[in-house]
Length: 154
Image (cartoon, rainbow, N blue to C red; front, side):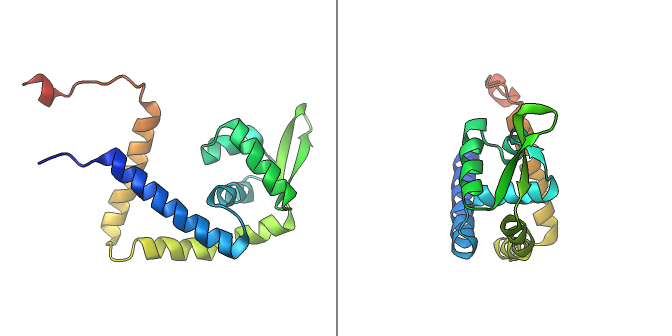
């Protein structure tokens, strides 16, 4: 039996889920999934740095800079100079950003339930565990292909 096409399936799944999230968040709040992720992070970590936000939402610093620019322009957050470093900024939610964080929690829970409908709880936990392990292994991967024992035996 052929191995699952993991990269392809993950790519398709990622794109489909984020397209759906973008449609839902854009129609409801006028924001993208990436902007929502930033708001959710700042809802937990007000005063975070741009680099902390970049790490949390898996974006490069230049991309986060543009993201923050757009969100600041739209009144969702504000930059304040970091007290200990005049070159850095801390990020804070504005009332409209905080309102989205609060209102969207139920929406995200409903979306998760919809996506996992028909999948038993045990399988849901197995999927989550698998994805977390895959993410950690991919982050640790140094790009060097290693031949599996199965292939060495041939």
